[in-house]
Image 1 (cartoon, rainbow, N blue to C red):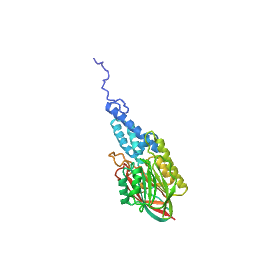
Image 2: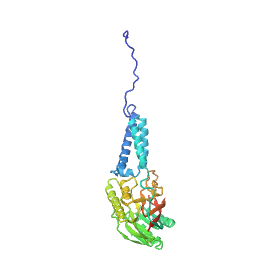
Image 3: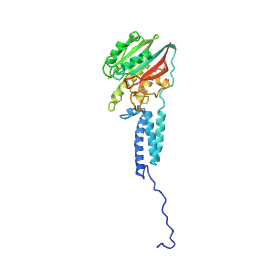
Length: 343
């Protein structure tokens, strides 16, 4: 029996204060997955902000930095489903910062000095153990580059270049005969003289080309890739490429540095090569800074640009670039048209 005069009681309508994902099990699971995704995205983007390439898996993930927008967006949706407001704010911040760093790195133009000395075309191609040699030769005949850089030029590649590419077309050559991925080659219409190589497991030859009376330092780049657990080799060899660029800048040399760098503009080491040598990425200069070059022969959407032609900004202007499919290799070739300036 109710007590006479007592105030009536009503069922409470207040909901308990809930943390991220608390309540329904699916909402809790969504919040947990969102947190895991955000930790990964934030770690990689944090290294990008700090100018560090980190340790595995950061160097590998940095190569595909723009693709981190996808897990960031998924994390945002999961945080919203899990009613995790902090997670939603975290995801929005991660997306904003990732989006900011998808912008191209480096200046949009070069400022060469002097008058126009020559127009030339450069081609770089990784033939993947020489398997793409036939199509490379076809590409060279069609595109008619003045200078050709070839990475992973195995014995079969070196022999084919010797036998099937006329000396009349490319009378000057620097070919390093090694098997597998270690071989490399530079073919040139312009006179070459020897220059120091960069020590590496896969050959990185160099030469000095005389173009319209001006010395131009040519250097092939092919450092080891940042394989999990072997980043030290990648750092060491790409660091030597950076040291070369810095030395060339100190000497005031005109430079064409081309090849398979196994690095993108989102790697701090690659950016240090540009900065140390006052070099510019030709693809960036011609509006193709995010055009992929690898992998070329797979169906995965995860693709990136690791093949580059870098030039000294006071000597060159890049007028056009194009990434070309070469059958038989997992890399696309890069063709660049350059204008050389000088006194």
